[in-house]
Amino acid sequence: MEKKDYIEIWDKILTKFKISSFVYDIGDNLRKFHLYKFLKIVFKNCPNNDIPLTIYDFGAGNWLYLDKIYKAIGENCLQRNVQLSGFDFSRAALEWGSCKYKNLKPKNVETILIPGDFVKALNSIEPDSTDMIFSLEVTEHLEDDEKFLSLTSKVLKEDGFLILSVPNSEPSFLSFDWFRYVFNHKKLIEKDIRVGHYRRYTTNKLHMMLNKVGFTTLKTEYYDFFWGDLIEFFLTQCFKRDSIFKKIFFYFCLPIIWLEDYVLNFLKVKRSGGIFILAQKTKSLDI
Image (cartoon, rainbow, N blue to C red):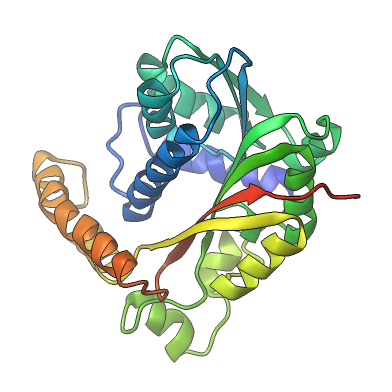
């Protein structure tokens, strides 16, 4: 999929929502939850000094999880200045997210929007210069995902962190995704192709690729198991428009989603809609 196609997709998406729109997407809310958890771990392991912290978010889109980034910084990293850069093909998407959460931005954070080809931008970043990189639901859109991850390792400082999320090719048994992929013997479905997915991932394949390009996987969690798809189906079918009743139903269902997520991750269940990984750069690469 070309750059202009992604920009057109974002333009269509953004026309459907206002800045003040409530976020009902289960996957987005679960990614917020896991990103916040991982950021708390990362900030506890960051040294306390006066050197500014550099964070790059590649493929940030409309930055729906920016509120959790700000919250984690505000709770754990107010003693250091933070330079947070969001990269995406769509300037409009980046501006939408930064505007939505502008009132939550801590005073020690400088937020920079960098529209354009973020893979090309990676090539121009100085090696060993970045403390932390996010890549949430991005690598499946890239034809050469291994090259992209190699470049992220190259620009990260020694012991720098990568937070990564990807769609899982092994969905929960009897979930909607299980019927779409496993039952129908399909690696990709129409939705994947429409949004530009080249692939979905298994945990083992992802761990092996990260290790190959110089990362050690510190923590792996899973999200969007069984109830997420079912609840989203009822939300879209029973509530055609945003309303107070839709919000009440969503808030009623949210504890079910959190409980499912907590219990199944505790039990180390790998079959899910998505994989969330915290990794750390462990060796210098000659790329």
